[in-house]
Length: 83
Image (cartoon, rainbow, N blue to C red):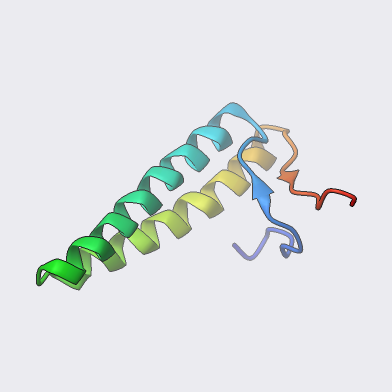
């Protein structure tokens, strides 16, 4: 994460094909994490799995940023719409 520029905006999926695939994998990971939170409200679960999914989604986000740069793409920054 150190060589990457600091974020000041949200990043939208894209930048390059490999970066977009990482963003998609991250979204799936985050959905699984939310499902584990919901499951944990009804049943006792091992929190290690939820922590793992959280760290994995962080890794996939950083990997997407690195791949976008490696592939010569640009990160797609979210811009607030003018009102």
